[in-house]
Image: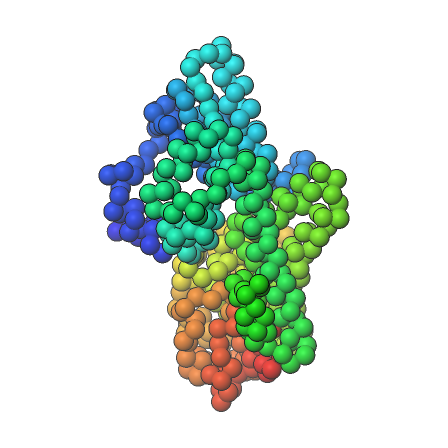
Length: 421
C-alpha cells in the first residue's frame, strides 16, 4: 500500500515507517508550529554543488540551509538545539549560528530565544541505510556546549554503545564527514585505475582486489572496480574539499583530490570508448540495452549515476538505447537523460523496457551498469538467440562468470578482466 510507495526506496524503511507512524513519528506541513514546539531540530536539506556564480562547480549551494536557519530563528521559542545533518562544507555551522543570532537581534533582541548548533553528519550508505543507522560504525557529534551534546548523545545511547559515540569540536566533526567520503571515493578511483592495467596485462581485477584486500591494513571494502562512483555525496564532497583547499591557498592539495574525480570521469569515458571500438567503431542505429540505471544496486537514486554519463555519450553517437532498471521508473530515466540540452531529439532513440527478454530482441549489445540481483542469473543462452550477431555483452560490474558464457555464441568483455574474450 502507501508504505511501498515512499519517495525513497530503501530496504526496510517502509516497515519502520509503518510501525511508528502516528505513535512517535508524525509528518506535518505546518512548519511554523513544528519549529515553535521543537527542542531539537535537524536540518537535513539538499546541499547541491552551485551551478553558477562564485565557486560554481565546486562549492556547495547553501541556500536551503540558510532559509531553514532563517525560518527556525523566526519561529523558535525558548532554547532550541539546531543539528546540521546534511553533508556540508566546513564552517557551515558558523553560518547557521550567525543567522540564528542575527535574526534574534533583528527581532528586538531578548525574546528569550537561545540556540546552540551541533554538527551530526550521517554516515549512511544508500541501499543499506537502515542497517547503517541501527548498527553504526560510529556516531559523530560536534559542538561547543556540553549540555547540548549530551542531550543529543542521550538519544543515540538508546541503541548505540557509548564507545561508538565520538564527540568533537564543530569543525572536526564537519571535516571528518568530508574526509571519510573523500577516502572512500579515493579507493574506488584507485581500484578503477587498476582495472585498466588488468585488462592490458591479462590479470583479473577481482583477483588482485582479493589479494590486496586480505591485507588487514588495506581491507577489502571499496576495492570493487566498476564504472565509477555515483550517488549524491562522493563527487560533491570531493569538489567541496577541493574548493576549501583552494580557498586556504593549498593548491597542490586541491589538485591531488581533484585527480580522484578526473579518474572517475576517465573510467566512464573508457567504458564508452571500449564499447564503440568493439562494435567496429560505429554504433549509429545500433540497439544497445542498458541493464541498470541507478548508481548502485538496492536504491532508486540516479544522482551522478555513471549510467547517465555513458548513456549520453552513446546517444551522441546515434545509438538506440533500451533501458531497464528494476526500481528506477521511466520518468526518472527520461528526466536524467533528456535534461541534457546538447543532444536534440534523442527521446526518439530512447526506449524504457521493464521486460528483459523483450529489451534484448535484435540488440547488438547489452551493457550491464548496475549490480542488481535480477541480472546475476539471466539465461544468456536463451537471450542471445534473439540478439543480432555479432552480439556483445559488456559487464562493468563483474557479475557474470565467464564460465557461464563459454559455449554460447556471444562476445564478452568484462571490466578489469584481461582474460575476457
